[in-house]
Every structure is written in structure tokens, then in C-alpha cells.
Length: 411
Ligand SMILES: [Fe+2]
Ligand SMILES: [Fe+2]
Image: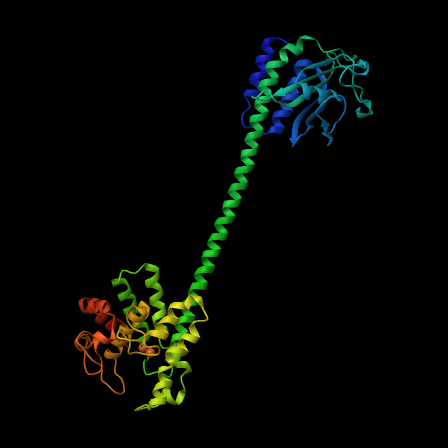
């Protein structure tokens, strides 16, 4: 084998980019056999798991008989010829495998022979990677320069020429294997990302549906409570909007403002549980009837406290009739002991009641409602009733309340 042949070999291997490992090995084996006139051959690839190391046949060729790759493995170490070559990384040339001296660290196993084939000469060398580790073994069998004649020994010169080939080929195989691994890995990643994206959009859709369902049931609950109530129509919707507006003026976080917006409408759900005779009674309520009516705050809290998502709604239901000076109900707490959500809804609720027509009062103008909430009248003393900060914000931003009223007033 001339140095031209080696160059030719290297170019052949290097010239084939992007071929699969399988294709690469088949071509390497074919070319090796062509150059050395080997009739048959096998390329083994080294595998390992923990301390276990073995060879697996990756390409098998034989011009004389039909062969299959076979699924046997060869342990790396002394014993077999290929196992020894892989272990030591040294080239082995055997003129006749049936005449291997007893002292050799390897032997030939005749039971491995194909029943219609006889091995005699053998040339076996290791393929190395960049780290000089053996990654495979090329086993060439029966040098047969002339068809029909007996095999001859491999020329000793082939061994010297094998070294550069073995290395370049080893690099190519390793590169091709890495490429295939990367490709497989990339495909796995792509598939997984696709799956994740699908799952994410599915979950997002579910969350949206759940949120929509939640918002709807909250609204239905609030509406259901209105059935027997004097406050009908868009009252609860408007209270939501005033409350949201006040929350924004108070510089509350966005999520909190959103929560106030859907929780405010729940302030009177407890009226569902109030004795119907009391609820529907026109005219003056006696003391016990008034007490039952006031209990709508506690009833509402009982209904809503069951759901963590409705915690703010439960607070609003319980505390929206408390007053800043502590003279409200049901608990008579005052100042900042009253949750801020309830303080907000309290003013929003009363503004809307003032603007609405009721059996006992006409609808007031915006200007009159502002006067009552900021200066007071015979029923409302703003200083005693409301959080002064909220009244302040109301008095400087009251126009928006009128806009909400106008936009959402009952037809
Ligand atoms: Fe109420
Ligand atoms: Fe109300």
C-alpha cells in the first residue's frame, strides 16, 4: 500500500461529510478491504457501561459468502483477537489463525467460523479518537490477491500504513457518532418543546376557562342575591367600577384592584339568607327586624368564607356597614381595623344608593351626592362614616363617579 493510497483513503473518508455512522463504517470497511485485498472483514465499535467494556459488530462484509451483522458481543481484554487489539490498541497481523502460538494473549475461536467459510490470515487494528482511546477495531480476513487461489498472509508493510488511517477514521467515526447523537438529542428536545408548548397553551386555555367560569359564578351569585333587594339593575356592576377606581387612586397593585373589582358586587349576597318577610317589608322595621336585616353582613360572610378565592368578598360582605368611628355593624370596629376593601366598597355603595331612586327617596344629582359624601346631611356624617383618605380622593376625583353612573345607569 503506497502513501498515495493512504492519501486517497484519507480523502475518501474526509470527503464524505454528513453520512450516517452506518454508511461511513460500510465505506471504510469496503475501502480497507480494497486496499489490503482482504476478502472479508468486520468493524467493531467499542461500547462501555461502568467498568464493563465490549465490542459490537457494526459493519460485516464477506465477498465469498452472504453474511449478516449478527448480535454477538466481544469482551474487551485478552482472549479474542479483536478484544486484545481493542484492549492494547496495538495492531495484530496473523498469517494463519489456526497456527497461533499457545503463549499468545489471544486465540482464535473456530466455533465462531461460518460453516461454509474458513479464516486463515488476519489483520486487525484499533481505531482511535482524539484522546488516543480505542473506539473500535477493524478486523480484515483472508488476504486474497487472486480470486480462486488460496489466501496469502497480509504484507507486513500494511501495519505501518495503518496508523494514520486508523486515527483519521477513528476521528471521522467519532465525529459522525457525535453528530448523530446531537441530531437525536436535538430531535428529542424539539419534540419535547413542542409537547410543552402544546401543554402550556392547553393549560392556559383551561385556566382562562376556569377564570371565566369563576367570574361568571361570582356575578351570578351577586345577581341571585339581588332578587329580593331594592338595589337592582346595574347597581352591583357600578359598585364594582367605583371600587376599582378608588383602589387605583389608592395606588394598590393591579391584581388587588382586579380582585376588588369582582369582589365588590358581593357586598350584599347575605341578603339571600335574610328572613323574606323582613326583606320584603315596606315601611319601618322594628328593632328585631332591623337586627335580622343587619345580619346580612354575617350571612354574606358565611356564604363567601368557604372559598379562598372569595376571601376579599367575604371581608367586604362582613364589614361594608362598619364605620370609621366604630359606630357601624356588625362588630362596631373602626378606623384601619376595617379592611380597606370594605372601606372602599362602603363609600362606593352609598354613592350609588344616593344616585338611585328608592321607595323612601328620589334619585339625587351627582352634585348633591358629592355634597352629602363630603359635607354630610342629617343621615350621613362623612367624618364618622368614611376613611378620610378615601373621602379626600373622592372629593378631588368625583367626576369619574358621575361618568361611571352615566355609562352604567339602568335603562
Ligand atoms: Fe349591605
Ligand atoms: Fe349595595
